[in-house]
Length: 566
Image 1: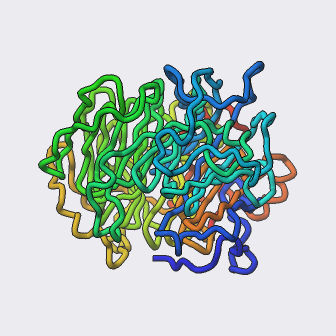
Image 2: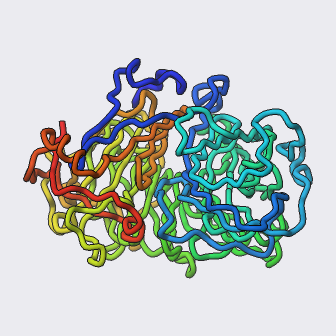
Image 3: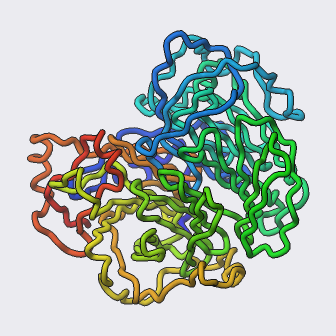
């Protein structure tokens, strides 16, 4: 595993020997600027291993006539559009935009908190922004006991807003880009509780505590502890996600293998009467007896933690990855497990969909990236290139192959992965080349991280006709990375693609923004000496746009040139 040396505030490229650019066939991706928290914030090494995660938020212009009075959720909310979805990370974070605030009742932040976080009336902390419209693009990230908000388009390294959680550290977050009632931001915390709130209202408030939130209590959080996690609550949140095309519905996964379904239009927590799970390795879906409260359902998915979740763009399918090493894909509406497969070794940590819903990525403790086909319901390619655990994977929705016609069906994709080896890898996926094996791996096995804490889970869930064992590696096409670049000093935890840049975050909370190549005749002429035409090696295949909807609004296109990567 990569060493966690250095600090987030001082991990400059020059001091650490890291390059400030990397090359792809379309040119140089340059380090534009960095974002991080205050040096005074205690980070990963001293905060109970709270890993920083990242969400990119696109906030629309404030609707005319809308007041700034905080409000709690009303009868429903619209959900994000598939075209706006930028992320596929295993924590449910997504690209964002803001709907309109509701006008329902205001609620005291202390009403159900039990001495935890509450509404702050202090004028201390960040500068007041009562008339702040909020339009823009923001990065939301957590470190220790604080949630930070930074302006993506500003070169200022410091966040513009910090939200302190006094009772339990924030671990994961997600944003609903079409929330009609204003509550568009979800935050899952270490205790297992979840909070919903308005991003715009947090930006407007001068205090350092969340305002006008709704609190969803996990009533199982004090029942047991997980010795393998240092005594941490086994019910802690691992991921939160809004359900696409399902108004006001969101899901929360936990370290005890449970996933709960919530409806934010319903009142708090009135029903936690779910049947006992007798076989921890089997899927068990139960519904609440009351139709008036939350949660509305519990899905017990696996033995051990659910490490990552991701919805297909249309919300039809839910993918989960777990400590038991299995990827599982569910028909969400029918509540049915339709297929799944196992890692080559150890736990799976992350998963992400292509924007057309045809392919899935997963990564984990076997240091590999797997590509799964929804049509074939199996693994169709695997990528070897990381030297330690893969912590985040995502398709690039803004990349388009050269000379592509956006009306044609996708035949090539580009995706990225980051890992604890501090590297960002970009990959080619040409569908015509995964119909048959590209090559038989020379070594016959991936690199393994020694001392896996999840090795004893490998046989916890025996394969069935739905859950398949991992295939022989020689029977699956092997991919090699187009780019392998060490981008941080510390292990990486997140990856985001935008139309203008690639964002990476390390577990300490340092974010780097890598600007895509500028597409102009001058830029192509300048870079032409560094590009090799016609290089068609396996490592330099063309990649596709994984999101035609996303690519249609982007000017990012790949020139018909290839760079022989070093």
